[in-house]
Amino acid sequence: MFDEKARRWLEEHPSRDALLIAFEDSRCCGGGHIRDIRLRRSRNRDEYSPKLIDIGDVAGRRILLDGRIMPRMPRTIPVTVGGIHPFRGLHLDFSGEEWARLLYD
Image (tube, rainbow, N blue to C red; front, side):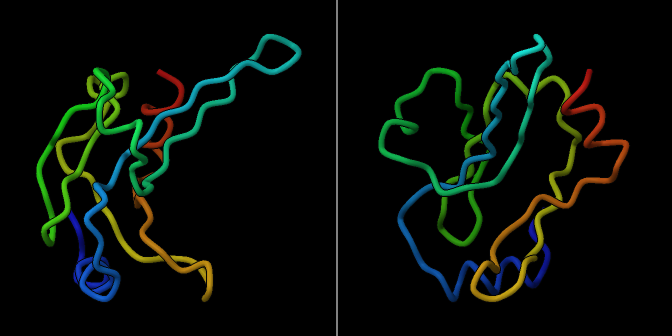
């Protein structure tokens, strides 16, 4: 669910690139996991990945989701604008509980 600020940001930054809710899981030296979920512009190689699910579109841009997090994803995906100019952009706006379930379940 893109709020009004996010929709306005998309209109001000037109692109043909899809938006991807990407998941990364890496291991650190002690064997622990470092997990990250972020909203980013898709890359050419992303478009053909079998693990990505097309979940809709907003302002003419496709939204792709990494299928590995699909079972833990809440029904609505809150997206807003955050950051300080020039690092201002779209951000996922989950609650602490939702982040915990996505990253640690």
